[in-house]
Length: 422
Image (cartoon, rainbow, N blue to C red):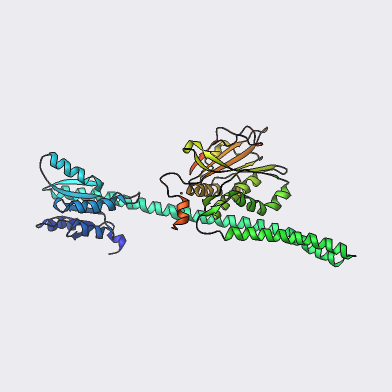
């Protein structure tokens, strides 16, 4: 039988007398597939190949068997609640029966049937257990489909990011190349050596600019696949280089406010994607002649036990985000760019921040006297208690609470004294 065919078979452990036969006969007559095992330990081996329920005679439920099954039950995925049916001897409730009940508690979804059991009661109980197990499998498949869809969306957004970067990089490289072409022509038509040298020096600067753009681009695509020590300020600088031409064309002023900033253990490529997305969104929202302020500093997130970390704040002087959109801004397919955006960037960014045990927040104002939007990302030096830290992951190779502060827009987007209090 294949794994899928095994999913609704019933494992039977009835080692004494004719119990096994008496159990299997009514199952077979009702079209229920069963598989006998001599011990509860042997049934556990079969459980790994797939099962819909377990029927277990009480005399086979030894303490070692309870320990093994309880450990396996505790490892079930969130969608699973494997049903066990225990055939127990009848009798009055006393201290001994209560003790046995306490010992069986780790088995989880346990149904107790007293023997002798009427065949109709036995079969209907098992059919109810199998229907429940079938619904669990439906939930498993639903979760798997959702996971596959989310992965497809993530890949789609990564392709969109790559496309936007390719277009931006092409534009950034094309301008200095055009300058170099013109300078080479001027060198060839120069009337003096001094004039030719002057053109040559300008051409060398333009080529150095191209080299820097290429270096930053290669850094983006050659990020290590494991967590490493990274400086947020370095990632911000490399991202701004890729947007240099767009910033100059729109005459947007950049204000860097880089304070004392500790390195964090993180996936540099993922953080680069977050920062590129936040800066790109800020540029798209800004009007010509606007301002973009980026602040990076050490801080503590006091509402989560004063966790030490690094906070990145990106503020623009654009038109702001409406409260209706702000409420669902970190959900898939929600955006402010209409048909020009995928609506996935901030969702992906929040997922990345969550995997780093951080938080991402937004404040925005659409008031004409003080419009603007502020995004704040907090990344802890260590992950929250109870989560495996990225620092550990970096040593042993082998993920956000999203807060939308829509009710308290910044008083003014610039300067940013209080736009993102911890």
